Structure formats: C-alpha cells, structure tokens
Length: 239
Ligand code: F6R
Image (cartoon, rainbow, N blue to C red; front, side, top):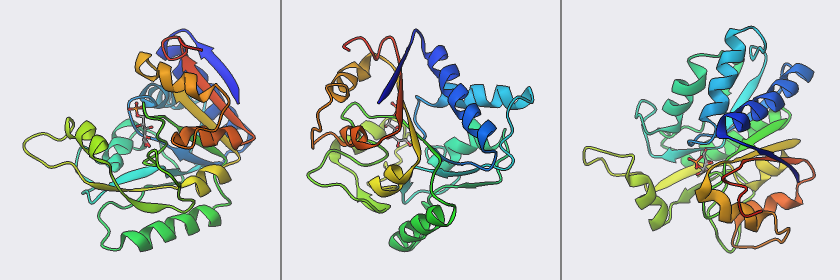
C-alpha cells in the first residue's frame, strides 16, 4: 500500500483531491466509487472549489456510492443519498451518480442490479474509502466471512447505537443497510483510503502491521495491488 502522511486534515483533503483530479484528467469518463462519513467532506469541498475554478470537470464521470441505510427515504437528512446531494451532487454535475436505493421494496434485487450496473460501466476506476474504528469498510463489519456481492446487511447492535446519535426526534435508526461487498471494491482498479483523526490511530496501526487479521475487514485491502492510503498526523500517530 502506498502511504501518504499529511500534517492536517486540510492537507489530506487536498492530497486526495489531487489524486481524484489526476484520475479525471487521465480519463474524463472515469467511474468513481464514492463514500460518505465525516472523512471525505473536506475532499468534496475541495473538489467543488476546483470545479468552480474550472480546474476539474466531472461532466463525463460516473459514480457509484458504497452504501446506504435500509430502509430509509432519500429525503431523510440521515440518508447517504441526502449526504451526497448536500456535499457534492448539488454542486458538481456528474454524467451519472448512482446510490443504492434505500426506498426499494426489493433490496436483494436492488443489490444484484447494482453489481450488474457497476459491471456494465466497466468496473470502478478509483474507489474512495473511509474506515471505521473497528476496521469496517462500507457496511462490511468485522465478521468471520465477507460477502463479495453487494448485499443487504443487518447492522450490529454497536453500529446501530453509534448511529443513533444522528437520528433525533425519537426517530429510530435503521437496523440494516445495503452495501457493496468486497467484489466491487476489489474489482476497482485503484483504491484511495482516507484515515483522519486520533480515534483512527489504532486501526491505522493494525492495518500497517501488514498482517491479514480476519476480524478486520480493512486488512483485506492489503491484498489489492493498487491502494493509496492518506493519513493525517493524528491518525498516523501510532505508525
Ligand atoms: C461511508 C462508509 C463508512 C465510513 C466509515 C468512516 O460510506 O461506508 O464505512 O467510511 O464509517 O466514517 P467517518 O469518516 O465518519 O469516520
């Protein structure tokens, strides 16, 4: 894995934006795999700035997001659909931007269709990832086995309670999600993993031990030939 250590979160975001810009520069109709969460927000802000300045153009690019809660309405402010619209898609126009449908009444069909669509697009060129403190990738939580296809996953009690802080006014957090499995992630030609903040220092250390810990989904990325990890100083503190 290539490793880039930046001083601050802002530097990490700029460095990640350079990699995305390079990808789009080389291949304007790239297929990007996108992620939500707090980590890529700075990257999305930087991409919007560069777009506004005419330095990057996503009009030919296509995107697929990693995951979505299920069930959830698209207009729910906690949905990943809403997040992507707020942080990127309302400001930057892509040729197509696909997110798993949290409103579908056929979650299994939706997952199968998603993998077909990724395949039909020629696979993902650059997959952006964040990482959970427990090493989760997308909604692929630590487990004894991992799914290759996109699938409907029941969330663990700890994930549901961690997410419950975002759901206010007595709204219950979703108990399941739809997520890309390792098939689409691994099929990606290159992977960009962003790790920021002191809370991620321990998991970053585990990842760079260079061992496949089966209970840590992110360790599977060690098997991919083209992964770049960008960390800020706080996340890299234990390396
Ligand atoms: C988001 C996702 C998650 C996050 C992870 C880290 O689409 O799939 O795996 O990448 O939970 O989240 P943050 O960045 O909020 O620490």
